[in-house]
Image (cartoon, rainbow, N blue to C red; front, side, top):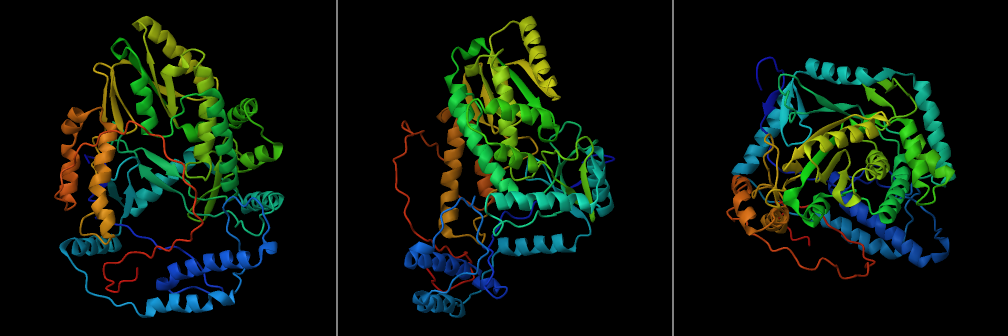
Length: 508
């Protein structure tokens, strides 16, 4: 990574992941192999209990929080449950080995033996090794830049406030106390200064579960605003592509691109308050909902048994990793879009989180005046932006837009190469069979036409070949009609046991 850098690139372990549902038995931990069956039995017991005792069901808004009440016994399900759990004892296994699995085990052993910290890249699949001391220093430096230490009494006070909010929503029996996971960093290896100067993103995984309620409130507010204003706040790449394709006379226009610097931590209390007050002109927002949103800004950061709060405003933080931070940014983004639309036509402007893109048809001096106006709008809210203006070609998310020829194509960062699940990985056969088709559809969607697809597909074919696949990706025509047929939601309880190639018994 160059002289003076302590971050050593690591070859990523083979692409394979698996997880099991987590559940607890009524009287203690469940053996690892029984977790999926226990989860299914719990769901069936509750469903059967309410069918047999409809009068006991109390309808209330739970925001997805699971009940902590002991699962009721249902005698009618006893025989089924006995047979369900007996499946585990009848399972037979077989040896499952191949070159890829051997490499996977080797990678795992290397990870377990290393005395260094393996750090993820911020916007790619790259991994870096760094000494423990250097990692701790890097995290501490990123923390002390914006945070100061606080006492445990501050945390206890916010926890009591969270309990009061839970009681107001009648959810005190379902919501756990805020978690205290340790903060960590990711490496911004896409920055031009890397590796000479290593910049990091500080992630705070400590969760206040009231954020689940705040997230749903903000989702409703944001959806109402988007429906009322028709502002181009894109939720995905496809929405941005649709906007680009709608632009007329592309060759006469240029891109006006801006990026909000450190958007999440730069949002101040006054800006969010102003955004919520503005949002009230489009949808009803109660004081209780505003208090819930503001409560979730009282976050704490934890590292090495120490707790930290923001220096500037300890009771307000939009931290990376919190349950509702993305929705807070969307609300503030809509508020900012409403002001930008006063100087740039709505149809020519869009925003995805902290990335903005517009097209303008102006001479150089007028573009510079517009740039200053845009910077001024953000400055009024104590936000900084970087801009790129008077350009014909630009990347946005994972697509590259070209106003000169009106085409768009897939885009990836120079430091990022696609990695796919290996053909010999321990995944269901139908998942691996569908993977090339899914990739082909995605690359086709990102490509304007068959010719663009053919030009760009080689790197993805090579990645598939590296993952053990022999198929070449084929261009998929885009559907002319995107209207989905309305389907009724079936009231079915599904059981999907985790896949393992070592199992020889045909469970399904």
